[in-house]
Image 1 (cartoon, rainbow, N blue to C red):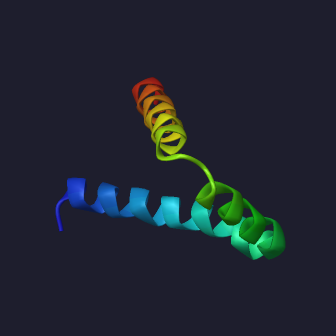
Image 2 (image 1 turned 90 degrees about the horizontal axis):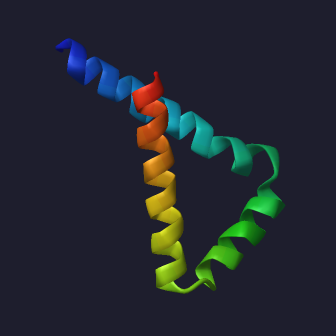
Length: 63
């Protein structure tokens, strides 16, 4: 496996760990959050996703 593939897999693994924290630590709150997100309009979700990606790209550029 080359270095790029290894780094990519590490990044995916880190995302999975971070994503798993809330359901592990507070499953009831996580369920409530999912219900709230399911009620949101698509435009709002897209806006949140866009800002999340932009912040992620900015952090990557800083690191």
